[in-house]
Amino acid sequence: MSKTPVLASFRRIVVKVGSSLLVDSSAGKLKRDWLASLAADIANLHKDGRDVLVVSSGAIAMGRSVLKLPKGALRLEESQAAAAVGQIELARSWSEALGAHRIVAGQVLVTLGDTEERRRYLNARETIDKLMQWRSIPVINENDTVATNEIRYGDNDRLAARVATMVSADLLVLLSDIDGLYDKPPSEPGGKLVPLVPRITPEIEAMAGTSGSELSRGGMLTKIEAGKIATTAGTHMVIASGRVAHPLDAIAKGVSCTWFLTPANPVTARKKWIAGSLEPRGALVIDAGAVRALRSGKSLLPAGVIKIEGVFGRGDAVVVRGPDGAEIGRGLVAYDADDAEKIKGQSSSEVLLILGYEGRTEMIHRDDLVLGGE
Ligand code: GLU
Image (cartoon, rainbow, N blue to C red; front, side, top):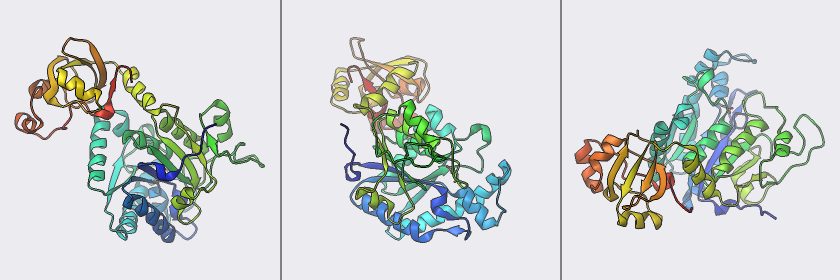
């Protein structure tokens, strides 16, 4: 029997907040007290040394309120313009709410390509990583003002799942206007809450139904989609009610909610994705010392690389070979083939001098590397 996880056991947590939790559409304003209670919960986790990232919806809803737009569907350019107004307010509110706990917030607005194209994915991840090293809290949303219908996530549930997997978070919390998944679609009465989903099966998907709330785009369906993205890549997920004050504290105290578990060996799932789903474009031959370093869990540094083969771009999948030519593993390389050629065998401090720009410290980051037998 799978066990329900405890919040305290996670070290990197992405918290997604739905629009209807943040914006009181009838009063036309932000729910400041609730936001303050959530910020206090986040500050507690942060103080304990955990990394917390926020994915906050509410730009369009907030913009509607500020602009006093009438109820009803907005055209694309109207929601884009509303988001421009709402996002600035949203960012300010987060900055104030976290600032009250002496935490610095950093706004990150992403478009679909930032997680779907590998080069941009690596780039976005570096930026977010840096914010976290500085102990600031990234507050992330889709860049709704420039996202068009064809190239958008559209819902922040899947966006949050993509972000969570991008930063190798171990938990994604979806705070919603409902407290979890019910065993009947929300449109049917008498459903019971499902506390634990060890695996997302077709039966689980059928429970999701199709509905969403008026303010947000995501219903249970996009939450299940988010669950698939997150759990396959090794991130647990929990759907819980944000209709209470201190919603994260409530989860920590065991409030009823729905947990989605990762497969038995989550690391393998993410590694499988790297090893299996991408076409290697080239190879890096590394020395015996680097082989040992990799096997003991380290990243691959330029210093350990002795030969570059093939033509690849930054973020492409490459094969890693030992000095005898045998495949050690595969990974996503942080430099293109030309630059890799220039910096192979060099110490990290030389890289800046050689390339004229400060690149990544690693040739392949540990998170982007899968070794044979893992
Ligand atoms: N990005 C949208 C906003 O900030 C929200 C999308 C969603 O509701 O999931 O308004």
